[in-house]
Image (cartoon, rainbow, N blue to C red; front, side, top):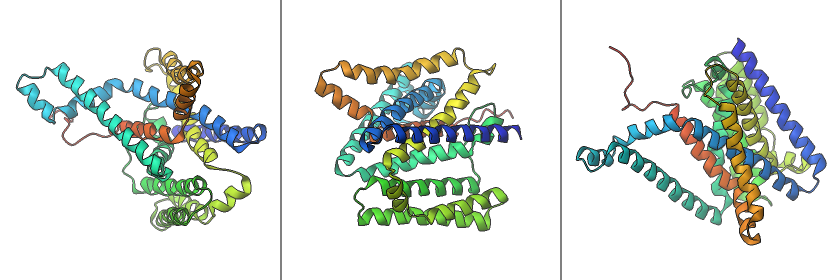
Length: 334
């Protein structure tokens, strides 16, 4: 029961922060383009700090999992033949991972040159992560502020898929301006998927919670995003900021609460502050670069589409650490 109270307190504080920030930004910055630049500069800088912090505090666990995975690759044969030491095998694993990520990033940027629609799958994964983490807040608070294994409950996955589809419908409607036939079909498909998930939750969900979530999904899917966005002057920048900032504030609150625990990692608060200063320092340093280079670096740094790639890398990292592969030892005693 305590975990439920803390989870809802977290949600209310996170939602209040997001609504307050967006309202203040609309009041103080009337120009949509300037407001979008401010949104991206603020939220993406904080976001990179979040991604770096997650990688820093999970580096040892991730290294162990990578070593385990490498033991089932051709590199294991080299180690068995004496061509690679255990240390070299681990280094090779990190180098292969880095090379693979850079190749994927290069391919992703090439696809973006053709159409920004290629960012939608990345947005889908990133949004799924935020929604899943939020729905798992109760269990996170009950398990010493640590995210547990990925849930297996059908209701959780249906709700996550439905909310993600609904948010993508709004993102697709705001991403294409002026509207196109492809955008209209994509938006309608996402709204239909959200309504479908909501219908299953209403008729097959166990308990009042899933049923109410289903009704909300059905109701939200009936609203035309283009009509709301046009009437309220919103856009992709506002939706992107709301989604990312909510997740950042939610996990910021969790991190602050973990810092006060006895079993928290040593100097966790100091490390978190230092890590979040890294992207700030990088952004500020671009103003000392030659004008053309500095502008190009700032544009890349504050691009939501570039950020989405690294956000998906973060999602895959955390999901991998929250699952146990079938080939890994279970450490169970007979």
